[in-house]
Amino acid sequence: MRKIACAAPLALAVVAAAPSAQAEVDGKAVLKTYADIAEANYADSLTTAKALEVAIGALVADPSEATMQGGRDAWKAARIPYQQTEAFRFGNPIVDDWEGRVNAWPLDEGMIDYVDSGYGTESDLNPLYTANIIANQSLKVNGEDVDISAITPAVLSGKLHEAGDVEANVTTGYHAIEFLLWGQDLNGTDAGAGNRPYTDFDPDNCTGGNCARRAEYLAAAANLLVDDLEEMVANWRTDGEARKAVMDGEVNQGVAKILTGMGSLSYGELAGERMKLGLLLHDPEEEHDCFSDNTHISHLYDAIGIRNVYEGSYTRTDGSVVKGPSVSDMVKKANADIDKELRADIDATVVAMKAISDAAEGGEAYDQQIGEGNATGNARVQTAIDALVKQTKSIERAVAALNLGTLEFEGSDSLDNPSAVFE
Image 1 (cartoon, rainbow, N blue to C red):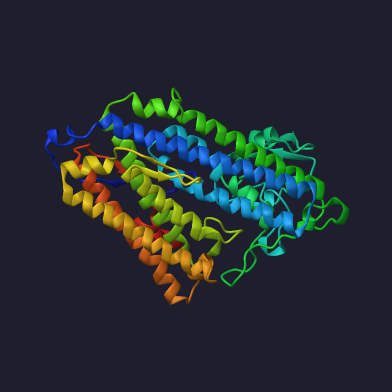
Image 2: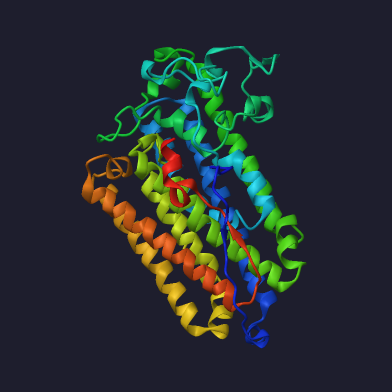
């Protein structure tokens, strides 16, 4: 979720460490590794988004079971590198301000296309709850008539995305594309993902109505995703704004960005908003990739992304490795026991996420694992949440070991004040 409704951020208790402990590791080299990994990771995200755009082009040009599956496969492949980039988000305002254009969730899908009757027809929070962009030539947004007769990247990203200042009015990015490729998942916590027919994109054998406009929307969203990722790759290249923001400041400020990103993703975002909230409510609508049932993959690669930035090593989609001096090296020099503990905790989180993923790949999707009455699945998810919380406490100790002062991590009501979730 781009903006989190959270409790007070998690404050870090900091103890003194010897100032000379970091001197043995080149701090600027650590920051360069971080920026190099960011550039490579976003470049891989761009490459896979371009492949997704090609696959969507094939679907639009020749709708069939095969081209529909090709689009879905390309979307899933694109999620693997992108989710690893989320470790760069919270410590870097350039990334966090941009992220809502590509990965905002949850979305009110009725704003985009037709929905099942069980979705309802109106929402007190969103006047555009069932606006259905695909079925209409114009929309009224904040009293203004908006021409949507042509669905273009500019139209989607201009006055439609988060229209009316409602965050659930998501019209761009991975999840808008996901909804168009899969449709709603109407299975609740039973087996099965969304099952949109390929004929929803076939004007000659149209199901769902407005097939040409639906294809137009999908192609525009894919094009926009590529454009947005090109922007972020540029931000991390030499002289890019994100790289300069990391490299041009004090070393401690840069390292604080890294650890803030790790801690906030670990605690408030992943453990809290993306996992504990859905588990408390047993609600499949709270899973991150809810249309495709791909949530297990997204959570796993978020955890791997945290490990990448801490250990200073990223394996690219082509198998090559970007590697260099790391925050782990700095923490090890300051306090080897804390580094060992944090590395072990991160590894334990990845193992716990892998258990969720293995179960999902074996036929028990994430939404089934958080379902009410599934004690084994619930426990599997809770184990991963507990691992993330423990990992965050070790990140706190790493901050203290490096004498970085007081940092604040994102919080979450689902962890900090669970009773508020049910109010």
